[in-house]
Amino acid sequence: MGPIIAIKYTDALYYTEKKLGHTKLQTHVAVGKIAVFSDEYIALSFVEKNNIPEKGLLVPKEILILKDNNYQNFKKINLSAKKNSNIGVYWKDIIYFENGKIPNQPTIVYTEGKLFLITIDSIGYLFFKISLIS
Image (cartoon, rainbow, N blue to C red; front, side):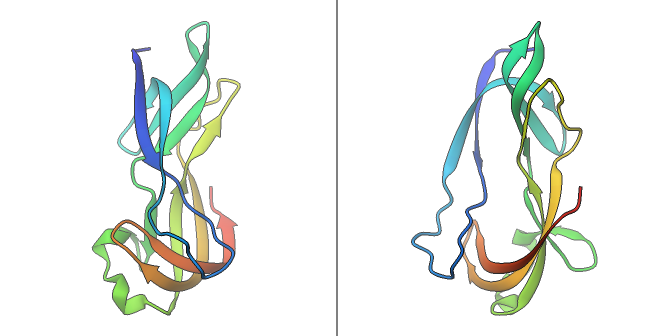
């Protein structure tokens, strides 16, 4: 495996009410060695045992997708027309791995809720249903 690197990523922010104190998602930094670099995700190893990735993160390159007949990046959809409507969102989650078992793809999660906020880098909605797809 290669040299130690740092990657920056954002993760979802969960609220139980419609009152948001801020909308800027926090940037996290993960430091480790690249275990897998694919078109869809980066697997970063924090701990190695005998030069084999033991613990780390699998971070999808594109996280949020809305379903409207097929998968699409949410930045390509006119969400203002959907404000105050119920929407369904499929998103790829960040996965922590250990015991040398690197997942071969991100976990896909489906949530439904009412869209109430749209910013340049995030959406806010109160979700009332969540399902693990893979």
